[in-house]
Length: 148
Ligand code: CMP
Image 1 (cartoon, rainbow, N blue to C red):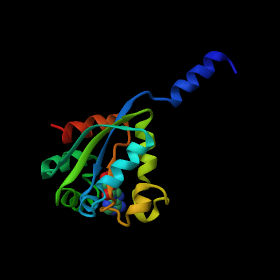
Image 2: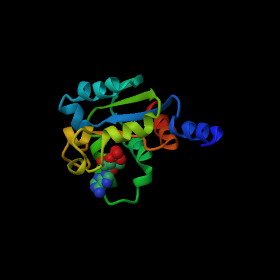
Image 3: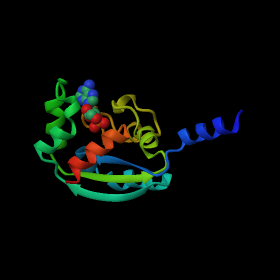
Image 4: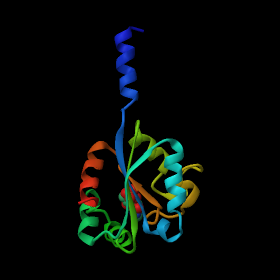
Protein backbone atom coordinates (compact mmCIF):
# COMPACT_ATOMS: atom_id res chain seq x y z
CA UNK A 1 0.00 0.00 0.00
CA UNK A 2 1.13 3.53 -0.79
CA UNK A 3 2.86 5.12 2.22
CA UNK A 4 0.67 8.26 2.19
CA UNK A 5 -2.54 6.19 2.06
CA UNK A 6 -1.32 4.11 5.01
CA UNK A 7 -0.48 7.25 7.00
CA UNK A 8 -3.93 8.73 6.30
CA UNK A 9 -5.64 5.50 7.41
CA UNK A 10 -3.64 5.42 10.64
CA UNK A 11 -4.54 9.04 11.37
CA UNK A 12 -8.24 8.17 11.06
CA UNK A 13 -7.92 5.35 13.57
CA UNK A 14 -6.24 7.43 16.31
CA UNK A 15 -8.03 10.57 17.47
CA UNK A 16 -5.29 11.85 19.71
CA UNK A 17 -6.36 13.01 23.14
CA UNK A 18 -10.04 13.73 22.79
CA UNK A 19 -12.44 14.21 25.67
CA UNK A 20 -15.82 12.79 26.54
CA UNK A 21 -18.43 13.37 29.22
CA UNK A 22 -20.01 10.74 31.42
CA UNK A 23 -22.84 10.96 33.92
CA UNK A 24 -22.99 8.30 36.60
CA UNK A 25 -26.76 8.18 37.00
CA UNK A 26 -28.79 8.25 40.25
CA UNK A 27 -29.30 4.46 40.30
CA UNK A 28 -25.53 3.84 40.21
CA UNK A 29 -24.81 6.54 42.83
CA UNK A 30 -27.46 5.03 45.12
CA UNK A 31 -25.95 1.56 44.71
CA UNK A 32 -22.43 2.80 45.63
CA UNK A 33 -21.04 2.01 42.17
CA UNK A 34 -19.12 5.30 41.68
CA UNK A 35 -15.74 3.76 42.55
CA UNK A 36 -16.33 0.68 40.41
CA UNK A 37 -17.21 2.81 37.37
CA UNK A 38 -14.35 5.29 37.80
CA UNK A 39 -11.91 2.38 38.20
CA UNK A 40 -12.95 0.87 34.89
CA UNK A 41 -12.00 4.03 33.01
CA UNK A 42 -8.79 4.56 34.99
CA UNK A 43 -7.78 0.93 34.49
CA UNK A 44 -8.32 1.36 30.75
CA UNK A 45 -5.77 4.20 30.80
CA UNK A 46 -8.02 7.27 30.63
CA UNK A 47 -7.55 10.39 32.77
CA UNK A 48 -10.29 12.13 34.74
CA UNK A 49 -9.84 15.85 34.12
CA UNK A 50 -13.10 16.98 35.81
CA UNK A 51 -15.21 15.16 38.39
CA UNK A 52 -18.14 16.47 40.41
CA UNK A 53 -21.18 15.23 42.29
CA UNK A 54 -24.19 17.43 41.69
CA UNK A 55 -27.93 17.55 41.31
CA UNK A 56 -29.14 18.44 37.80
CA UNK A 57 -32.00 20.95 37.66
CA UNK A 58 -35.02 20.28 35.44
CA UNK A 59 -33.83 23.04 33.11
CA UNK A 60 -30.35 21.49 32.77
CA UNK A 61 -31.79 18.01 32.18
CA UNK A 62 -34.21 19.25 29.51
CA UNK A 63 -31.34 20.99 27.70
CA UNK A 64 -29.04 17.99 28.12
CA UNK A 65 -31.57 15.57 26.64
CA UNK A 66 -33.18 18.05 24.18
CA UNK A 67 -32.71 15.68 21.20
CA UNK A 68 -35.20 13.32 22.94
CA UNK A 69 -37.81 16.00 23.71
CA UNK A 70 -40.42 14.48 21.40
CA UNK A 71 -39.94 10.91 22.62
CA UNK A 72 -42.56 9.31 24.82
CA UNK A 73 -39.96 8.59 27.53
CA UNK A 74 -38.70 12.21 27.79
CA UNK A 75 -40.65 13.16 30.94
CA UNK A 76 -39.62 10.00 32.73
CA UNK A 77 -35.99 10.49 31.69
CA UNK A 78 -35.86 14.09 32.97
CA UNK A 79 -37.64 13.12 36.16
CA UNK A 80 -35.20 10.25 36.81
CA UNK A 81 -31.97 12.14 36.10
CA UNK A 82 -33.06 15.02 38.38
CA UNK A 83 -34.37 12.76 41.16
CA UNK A 84 -31.11 12.42 43.12
CA UNK A 85 -27.41 13.24 42.90
CA UNK A 86 -25.37 12.26 39.86
CA UNK A 87 -21.62 12.28 39.24
CA UNK A 88 -20.47 14.14 36.13
CA UNK A 89 -16.98 13.73 34.72
CA UNK A 90 -14.81 14.66 31.76
CA UNK A 91 -12.48 11.87 30.70
CA UNK A 92 -9.52 12.26 28.37
CA UNK A 93 -7.54 9.89 26.15
CA UNK A 94 -7.01 8.49 22.68
CA UNK A 95 -10.31 7.63 20.95
CA UNK A 96 -12.02 8.10 24.30
CA UNK A 97 -15.49 8.77 22.80
CA UNK A 98 -15.69 5.52 20.83
CA UNK A 99 -14.00 3.40 23.49
CA UNK A 100 -16.15 4.80 26.30
CA UNK A 101 -19.32 3.96 24.35
CA UNK A 102 -18.05 0.40 23.91
CA UNK A 103 -17.26 0.17 27.62
CA UNK A 104 -20.72 1.54 28.52
CA UNK A 105 -22.64 -0.95 26.34
CA UNK A 106 -26.11 -0.95 24.77
CA UNK A 107 -28.78 1.51 26.00
CA UNK A 108 -31.05 -1.23 27.28
CA UNK A 109 -28.98 -2.71 30.10
CA UNK A 110 -30.67 -6.10 29.74
CA UNK A 111 -29.34 -6.25 26.16
CA UNK A 112 -25.86 -4.92 26.96
CA UNK A 113 -22.99 -7.36 26.53
CA UNK A 114 -21.41 -8.93 29.60
CA UNK A 115 -18.15 -7.09 30.28
CA UNK A 116 -19.72 -3.70 29.53
CA UNK A 117 -20.69 -1.40 32.41
CA UNK A 118 -24.43 -1.67 31.75
CA UNK A 119 -24.12 -5.37 30.93
CA UNK A 120 -22.40 -6.11 34.23
CA UNK A 121 -24.13 -3.65 36.54
CA UNK A 122 -27.57 -2.74 35.20
CA UNK A 123 -30.98 -4.09 34.27
CA UNK A 124 -32.99 -1.04 33.22
CA UNK A 125 -33.45 1.43 30.34
CA UNK A 126 -34.13 4.71 32.12
CA UNK A 127 -32.07 3.50 35.08
CA UNK A 128 -29.19 2.32 32.92
CA UNK A 129 -26.30 3.29 35.22
CA UNK A 130 -24.36 5.71 33.02
CA UNK A 131 -24.55 8.17 30.13
CA UNK A 132 -21.66 8.89 27.74
CA UNK A 133 -21.39 11.41 24.88
CA UNK A 134 -21.82 9.82 21.46
CA UNK A 135 -19.81 12.34 19.36
CA UNK A 136 -17.50 15.36 19.70
CA UNK A 137 -20.53 17.59 18.97
CA UNK A 138 -22.56 15.97 21.77
CA UNK A 139 -19.60 16.33 24.13
CA UNK A 140 -19.37 20.10 23.45
CA UNK A 141 -23.08 20.56 24.07
CA UNK A 142 -23.24 18.33 27.14
CA UNK A 143 -20.15 19.71 28.87
CA UNK A 144 -21.56 23.22 28.55
CA UNK A 145 -24.86 22.20 30.13
CA UNK A 146 -23.33 20.31 33.03
CA UNK A 147 -20.25 22.42 33.85
CA UNK A 148 -21.75 25.90 33.58
P1 CMP B 1 -28.59 7.79 27.83
O1 CMP B 1 -27.38 7.17 27.27
O2 CMP B 1 -28.47 8.66 29.02
O3 CMP B 1 -29.27 8.65 26.66
C1 CMP B 1 -30.64 8.86 26.53
C2 CMP B 1 -31.42 8.07 27.53
O4 CMP B 1 -32.78 7.88 27.21
C3 CMP B 1 -30.87 6.65 27.57
O5 CMP B 1 -29.62 6.63 28.17
C4 CMP B 1 -31.97 5.93 28.33
O6 CMP B 1 -31.84 6.10 29.74
C5 CMP B 1 -33.20 6.68 27.83
N1 CMP B 1 -33.90 5.88 26.82
C6 CMP B 1 -33.49 5.56 25.60
N2 CMP B 1 -34.41 4.79 24.96
C7 CMP B 1 -35.43 4.62 25.82
C8 CMP B 1 -36.66 3.94 25.77
N3 CMP B 1 -37.03 3.27 24.67
N4 CMP B 1 -37.44 3.97 26.85
C9 CMP B 1 -37.08 4.65 27.95
N5 CMP B 1 -35.90 5.34 28.07
C10 CMP B 1 -35.09 5.31 27.01
